[in-house]
Length: 363
Ligand code: FAD
Ligand code: UDP
Image (cartoon, rainbow, N blue to C red):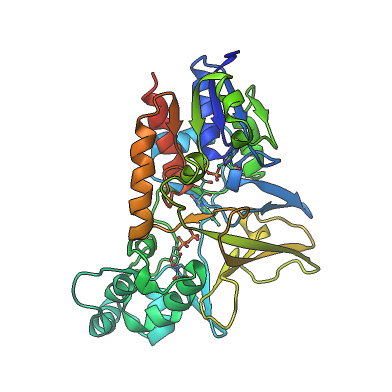
């Protein structure tokens, strides 16, 4: 019965990277995914000749040359740099937090003037949660304008109940630079993410609309080892409790205009608007379509049956996760990887790095 070296559960970035590396090393792989398409949350589809990021904006960024070379095997990348704006009650501010933001907020024109204002408004002491961390980094005005409302909507929790690392994802700089990331390499795969995955999966067997958990015994019998990239609590049938996730609803609209908002990503930072951001996809790849496609992103309470987009890494969930993680180590025929299994807020480059390292452990 064992026809494959690896059965890979999940055709997202972790599963596809692992499968590519294993196939290149002469191993046989079968990938299954319960969705009806490849590429997991990176999936893109063409609408009105525009590559639409179906599951939210995906900007590739990394400082790791090995990872950058890996993705460039499958696609050319453009030179897109993410520079979103934050809309607070109709006024626009530059993101991430930099001299442009400070000028727009306070009219200050030098780094020393900006630092002086932040210093007066800062939280002093060791930050223990997202609110204290944000106040410690940028002070009260920016926290209340650009962070508090957005964060409350995004996570459905008071920022005091959230871990501080979430806000440390955003750069803070005292230069006029709106680049959302600090990484050396950044861009969007020309032609879309799905096309990049198609090339990555060249010669690898993929079965879609196939749920591993519907018949584990059968699927386990197909291969010597199983690479699992789904939710770890589901894998163990929730024996230590359910982990919390945050879900999202994406509302895609085709509009009869060639330029709706003038940039790829506009965040809505107050709570008067219920969505967190509007993405205008044509700006990722500079499409010359006469129409445009926008996506409003509505955060949503997760429940079984919805897609678990973000882990909620607070203390309670981390302690449940640790139990699953411990137990997973005893299953020697299984490899666990990806953001749902590691229960971690992982960007794409981190997922690829992790898959490369896990595969190295195999050879
Ligand atoms: P996934 O893409 O979730 O793949 C897991 C796959 O496993 C899924 O396709 C799922 O259907 C399948 N699966 C699960 N259970 C089963 C089962 N029982 N049987 C069969 N199949 C199963 N990263 C960046 O670097 N830059 C960005 O700009 C960025 N923006 C993002 C925006 C949003 C809204 C989100 C949610 C994430 C963003 N990310 C971004 C993160 C990026 O999406 C992830 O790093 C990456 O997709 C994770 O890949 P993965 O393979 O771990 O997970
Ligand atoms: N955030 C915020 N205001 C913004 C953008 C981000 O308060 O305008 C906070 C929010 O808590 C968010 C976190 O910073 O969850 C990380 O932002 P990022 O843009 O990395 O989120 P992602 O694109 O991964 O959803």
